[in-house]
Image 1 (cartoon, protein in one colour):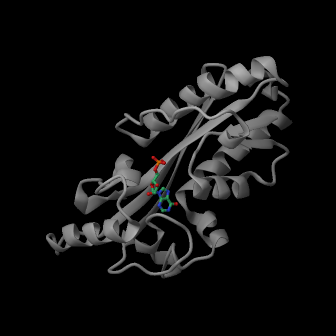
Image 2: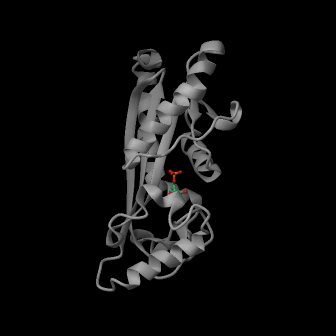
Image 3: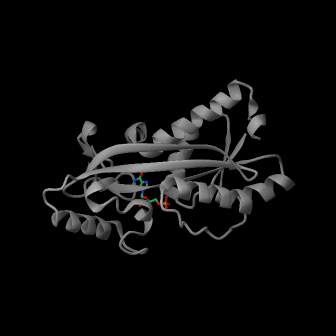
Length: 216
Ligand code: IMP
């Protein structure tokens, strides 16, 4: 079984490879194929964007390649981000572009803290969300979402992980996800939760011998 992990984000790719490493699958990335332009992430939900990316990369990369090369290929795309309740859900689907597309994460943290300071009595609750969609030959064959609940820390802490991890406080660990190890993060975080569901589905298809032939 071959999976194309359709992301251009090296941090996500590293995490996803780790999450799928126990499966008997060949994991390919966009780097294994000729470069194509990135799609416009115009969806208003994580699920919509994950689907849009999976359909796009299936049509632009996986499907044409599978037809001429060695058999079918599942295209797995994900969309993720930080949802802050007191900011009406922002940065949300715009997490990667929040404030300005080229803003640094310290600048984004400062903007979040500035906006939260204008609402001192509002809760600091937040969550990371990861939506995964799998498309094969133009058909959506699987989707799942993973969520981790936490709070915006009063200040950034830790140097592990990426993106908003240093400001995401996870109460059961009493640490931000920037302070935890990658293994601890994956056990509880959104991407880990979503990709473990995907892994279970792939495993079920394989063992029930529905085969991926019902999918592939
Ligand atoms: P996407 O590539 O449009 O899905 O944007 C995802 C963005 O959400 C990333 O660039 C980060 O800013 C943020 N994000 C998603 N997952 C994580 C995570 O695990 N830790 C920290 N930030 C994340």
